[in-house]
Every structure is written in structure tokens, then in C-alpha cells.
Image (cartoon, rainbow over all chains, first blue to last red; front, side):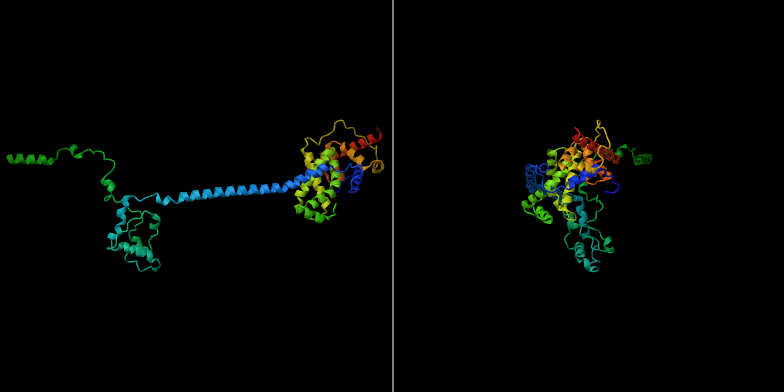
Length: 210
Length: 181
């Protein structure tokens, strides 16, 4: 730090004069601070722990507020997720589809023993395939229904109860009783020209008459 | 006043022991007040600096690692406190337009030392413009280089050198006036 410094005699004078002083104040007290300084310092350093405590309280309050907000957001999102399965209900049109495997005996019988690890699933499907068993009605809760999955390739040919089936237009009750009345369609028979058969009969009459 | 060693003072202050806090102040207040008197324009300003400096000492005592002398560490805090006080003053580094340099009035330090005591030199120093006084203190007494002064005060090295040169001549003029009114 003292390299390349050009000291002046003035610098030396001040440096030596101020550094050679003792730690005791001078007789006239020009270099002694007033008592007010220590009193102010004491007030500050005694107030410091209280301020640090208040800072700790602030930090705790902020942390509590943040955790409450986080918990609120968590439960809000959880609530939004929970009722979601109850909202979509299967349309009535799918009910006949669920009963289809009961009518077909070939559906679940072959793979009942082949995969012991999945006996439960296959068993349920086998029960569905029995002619005496009651038809499995589609449950309102799709989460339980989705547990039945095809086990092997043979089951892929079986009609999956839970798979989206093709819409059965024949058994569609909505089609039988439509809410909106169908628009009157123009009767094409009226527009058609008169059938030539009548002309033939007349011709025949004419021929027979003749 | 109980005589504590520096490590005892440090430990006591860290434990918020009032006796150790008071002993630390009693031990270092006078030498630190002298340091601050050189940077300040009067006693009141030096006392404000001393108060802020000791509050920082008690607050930052945990940063003292005991590698150097406790007095040196406290002195650095006091100088930094004085510089932060001075930086708050607007345009504290500026040239004095009516300054008339003169040379060779006082040739050696022995001439000063034989005639002036510390209190008189302090009064002369406090009459300097703030910029001159600060740069002179940092360079001549505290041992800073011009690069360090420029970094501390946010000025150029050339400004630091010119402020030092003018401070020296200003001091010579003031001392000469005190002896030749």
C-alpha cells in the first residue's frame, strides 16, 4: 500500500503527530467524545435485540402467510380434481352395449386359466360371459370400470365392455322419441308421375275390351 | 474500568454483555474519535460518525475473525463510516477557486513538529475543504494509494492526485497564516 508513494514533509508531520498520541484523552479533553455518544450507542445496541426479534416475528408471519396460501391453492386444486369423475355420466344409449357380452358366450371362456396372475380380471370377464349370470350394468363410477383391461390377444377379440362402442342406432331410445319433431319431409310419391302400371291396366282393359 | 483482553472483549460483545460493550467503548473511543476528528469538519460531525461507527462495530463483531488486531479492525470500520458520511454530502470533493498556492514556506517536517501540537494540527486540518481533507487523510495518514482513494470516493486517480497536491499547499498556507497572522 505504501509503494510508489511520494511523501511530503507535511504528510510525515501529520502522520507522526497523530500516531504517537496515547490512548488517554488530553487534559483539556479536545479528543474525548461527549457522554451523549455513549448514551445514544447504548440505546441503539439495547434496542437491537428487540428489532431482531421483531424481524424474526415478521419472517414467521410471512412464512405462515405463504404456507396458508400454498395450502389453500393445494386444496383448491385438489377439490377441482376430485369431482371431475362424477361429472361425466354415460349416456343411456350405452346401456345396451354393456349387456352385449352376456348374450355372447364365446366372449370370456377361453382365457380364464391361461393367465393366473390376472385371475380376478379374467374371472370378472368370465362371469360376464356366463349365460346365467346377470348382465353387468355399467357403473356410474368410471374409475372402477377402467380397471378391466384386456389380458392377452384373445381377449382383444372380445367385446370390451368399457371400450367406447359403436353407437347402436337401432336401440337408441332417443331416436324413437326424438325431442325435436322431425321436419315434414316432402312425399316423393306425390311428386312422382303416376305409375305406368295403371296405364298398363288401362291398356289391358282396353285390349280386353277390344 | 475492567481491563479485558481483546478476545475477551470480542466474546463479551458477541454475548451482548453490557460490561464488555462499555469496556470496548472506553478502550477505543478516544483513539477512534481522533481518527474521525481528522475527517470531520467539527466535533459534532465527528461524534455522529463515532456513534454510527461503534454501532456498526457491535453489530458486525461476528465478522471479526481475530486474524489482526482488534483496534485495526475497528479503525477500518471508523474510516469507512466517515467516508460514507462524507459521500452523503453533495459535491464534497471540489476545487477551491480562491486558492493561491505557495511554495517553500516550510521545508521540513521538523519545522512543523517543533511548533505545533496535535490539537493545533487538528484544527488546521479541519479548516481544509472536505475533499482536500479526505484525500489528504487517506493518503498521508491512513496510507491509502491513489487507486484506492479513487475507488473509495468514486473519483478518478487524477482527481485524487490533484486534491492531495492542493491539500498540501493549503495546509502550508494555513500553518503559515497561524504563525504569521
